Amino acid sequence: MTDDGAAKPETSRSGILERSFAILSAFRPGDACVQSSELARRAGLSKATGHRIVQEMVSLGMLEKTDTGVRIGLRMFEIGQLVPLHSPLRVAALPFLSDLAATTGGAMHLAVLEGADVVYLEIVNPIKGLSSRPGGRLPAQATAAGWAMLAFSPNSVIEAVQEQSRGRRGVGRMPTTAEKADIQSNRFAPDPRSHQEAVEAVAVPVLDLEGNALAALSLLYPAGAPDLARFVPALQVAARGLSRALYRNRGHESI
Image (cartoon, rainbow, N blue to C red):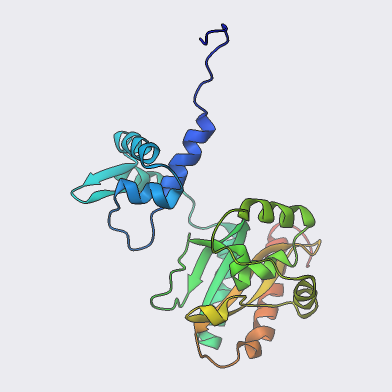
C-alpha cells in the first residue's frame, strides 16, 4: 500500500515478458555465450535490469550459465521443438524455391512481414557467410523483401511499421511515393541497401485475393553479380503460382 492507501502498482507482467524476449532476441547467430552486460546493452536495458532478468531466466532454465557468460538454455530448445516446422505457406513455397534456386543459382528466401521486420521462413541454396537464416529477421525497410511487401500493404500496416521503427537504428527507410509506384507497376522491388552490403537482391510479392502482400520471394547473390532483373519474370511466375496454390488449398478458385 502507498501512503494515501492506494494499492502499490504491481510490476507489469507484459513489461517483464517484453524484456525477457528482448534478452532472448539479443543473441546473434554464432553466439556461443554472451555476458549479461552485453545482452542488456543489445536489448536496450540497464545493466542492473538486464542482470536481474538474466538471473530469473537462468533459474527458469531459459538460459544457462557458462564460465564466460550465459547461453540459450536447454528448456528453450525443448520448447522450440514444439513449434510446427511445416507451415502451409512454407510447404507450398518449397517446390517454387527449389526450382528458382536451381534455375538462378542464387539463394532463394521466403519472407513474411511481422511487425516492422521481415521474418525468413525458408532459405534454399543459402550464401555462405550471409547472416540471414530460417527464423531470422531483419528490418523490413532495409530489405528487398520488405519493400516488396510494404508496397502492397494497406496504410494501417505502413503506419504500424513506421511507429515500431521509430528510435531503432539501422532500419533503413520507407520507399518513396515514386519508388512504391514503380514497385506496384513492375511487381518487383530492388534491394534498398545493395550498395552497402556484400549481397545484391531482388524480391517479388506474393499477393492475396485483394492484392495485399502475403509474403515475398527474394533472390540473393554475392555483390557484383550480373543484373538480377533478368530473373524477375521467373520469380513473378513463381509468386503467382504460389498464390494460386495457397488459395486452391483453401478451397478458393485461382487468384
